[in-house]
Amino acid sequence: MGLYYLTVFEKNGEKLLDESFEAQTEQEAKEIGQRKLEENNWIDKTHRCTSAAGKLVLFGR
Image 1 (cartoon, rainbow, N blue to C red):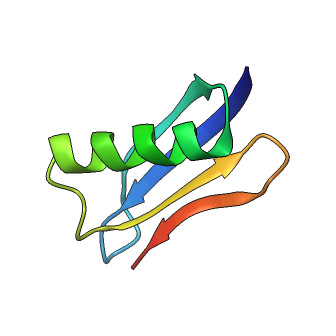
Image 2: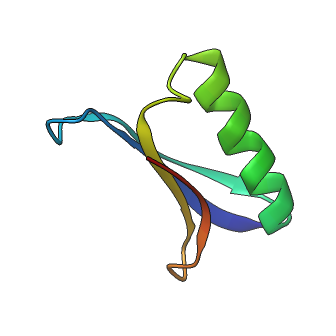
């Protein structure tokens, strides 16, 4: 299991979400991150999902 971080921002830089979660693979982390964005209607917000090692898994502006 790897640790991943999902962060969502408003245009003014305010953080809407900053949480960690575990996933087996980078693909699974991307899917989990995408699902959380869709569930909270944040898909159009600036967001990123990174691994604990700092690798970018998901990004949107």
